[in-house]
Length: 166
Image (tube, one colour):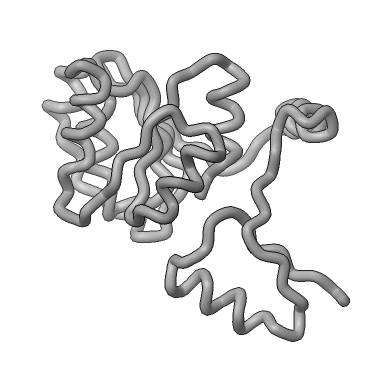
């Protein structure tokens, strides 16, 4: 769950629409600041839900956090002159790019791998002041690291999993 993106959206006055695969995570996303949440049923229809929520306009900016499995939906959910910012690729790197969709919507596709020093200093200042609120879902002792892996493998966690040296 990308609560940092929700915090940044809140700080900049944006309406944020989060997409998740589970109802229990939807509640956590609303609590973390999402304006709206769309449940991805796995039927590849969530972009239609985003279009409905935006009165057919689509999103100004879509953060693509998953990769190949959600790429086409992210591009479909983006509005005219929208941006798709690719941050993650956990489900795969190779996607089919519909050039007609790119041209007709005047989409901008942007890849992001890491921030520069100035951006990171800005993030740290916002975190120190409490404007950015990291969501820690589980704090687990290092010797129980297998539990952290189980939570990640079953996709049953919300927030960050922190390993502690107790």
